[in-house]
Length: 504
Image (cartoon, rainbow, N blue to C red; front, side, top):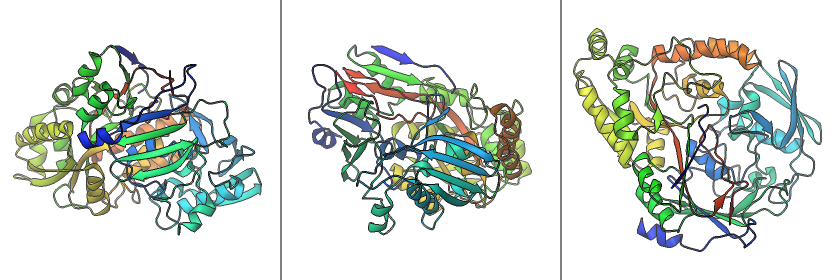
């Protein structure tokens, strides 16, 4: 087996049968034929402003290019916008590519960008917090857009590399009544063909895509296989060309096959315990800190993730330019955890926790249940399918805790803003973490990474002190590549795009 590793900053037989159509490239290695990809979870929505899962991105990227792109280290790169410039701290001007069209033939111009950014801030959007700093969008000319900001926002450029920068066709959005969940029309390298819920998504190459030089397969089929061993088996049998989200327990089986490649890379993907600070069970910060102190993360990393990850000090990995402050530490101290539980009057605490119904998550849940029992805390584990668990927690707020992942965002301020501020979708309490607003306001007025680091250090200290979310481990990105797959690249987000991938 070949292992490709870039060390930097860091569901079953019926399904298998349904996706066994032949793929493959031409004899000269060009990108013809079908690329078959297995993924863990179905997309929550094909409308970029309406989804609620970080794992959606891999299935959105083929459909939607973003205004700003990024390289493997998350440095901003031209996307649908060829260039951008801050004319002042509250004026960001974007210059768009000429001649770009949506899949329905409509032009992607300044009016379309204005429509999209205003739509992202409107009712029904899950990304209002991403664009709340934009006071107005001004069309300067057909290819120039000025964003007038209510206050400086240093994270805005890379925000436009995420959902807010995924442009949809205004004509198609209006025809769909404002909801493109099942009728996506973007300007990406592939256009939508078919979505079989819970089973697969099919895309075909968009002939009028603006970048005619990039290699693209004729068709892409992404099949949903929640069971990790099914993904690994389908890769080994040749029924899939790429298997995303190989779990650590299956890495060895990929390792033993000389025809396969395991692509391993550190990433921002963090497994953590989301908590509702407004709940009676977990509303006291002393209780949340006690739960963190009672976690033996070394044991969790070794037993559940086979050592294929890193212990966190916060919510961004060490080595990244915005890594947590040195003051942000996550210790293991049972005596201190017991003291905090007693001080909070929380002896005999019991609470429900949602988690994903896969083997690794269940294993982690059982280990946490045992570790927390040592400080007199009982947790009732509620395993659910991915999208159901996300909806039960973030939309319906059915439990005070949820063991799940934060998949990362292109700019560090987004990670803090989208989890810890009052209006953030991923903050079920509706309460800001003390100190976070001040730290983010300081960061927003700065532009250079070395200047922003001090403000982001304050944010990292604030969230570790209050512990509204409890990080467990940064799990490495593990992707299985079948024989003949070339050109695959990932990034620090661990959310790969399929541009440039071919089959020889």
